[in-house]
Image (cartoon, rainbow, N blue to C red; front, side):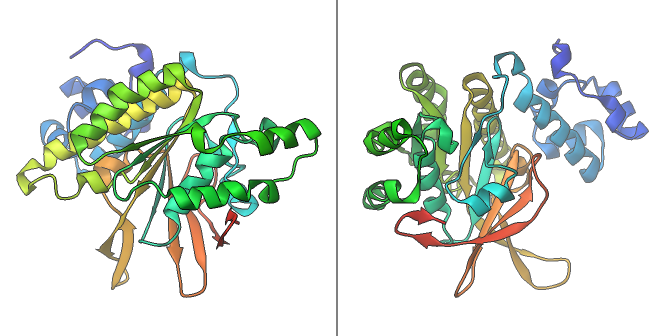
Length: 321
């Protein structure tokens, strides 16, 4: 077993006696040793049930996401989404550290939400912004430049400042130039982007949010059925490194996910986020967007900051309201 720091050790007390004994017997006492494997590989190795293995992986992923706390800022700055109802839904806004996933069917507002966040991060602190830029990684369509310009032209109408200084800053910020845009087509390109390009950019530009729109696109169709373990490892590699960047640099991380159809317990099909447990285990907050013929909704599926609930929203020229 590899040596690890105490901060990387699992708390065995949260598991049942059989799971504790299996982890001790196999020498799997740290998140680092556990996350080397896929859940299926680990389950066979330690001889645990699917449910028990999933609980171990959730615990290991949570430790992995927070084991660089020595770099963490004293206050977990909360970023506004630009919509009061959604801020209230999230317990105040978007929290730093970890991955916030936004999933939903096509056309429900996921990209609109991400574009708005790429702007709100540039707002003055008095408006719950961060006076910083954004890195926006596109993997499906080209960056929607005309839409972001429309939203920028409406910023002075959407947000109101109490002080003249903040109002001047709001109107004079060059929002478009503060968004670093990359277009990625493959998993290897995405890994290179987050492992090499983003760390360099973070050293030279005041970036406080990373958006990947979408994480799903590069993982669909690139793996054969026999390559599922490699797919899980690549997903985990990307997610763990994003967590690391988030904690070391004080970033918000937003990843768009698509949805897939699943048979529900009560019969019929329902839409669930794609990429399975290999990805879900490493997501901190999961949001689901949906739409009907007349309304759109955003729902908290799980989050350490608020209970599961949902609110309606609208997409206007100004953005999401």
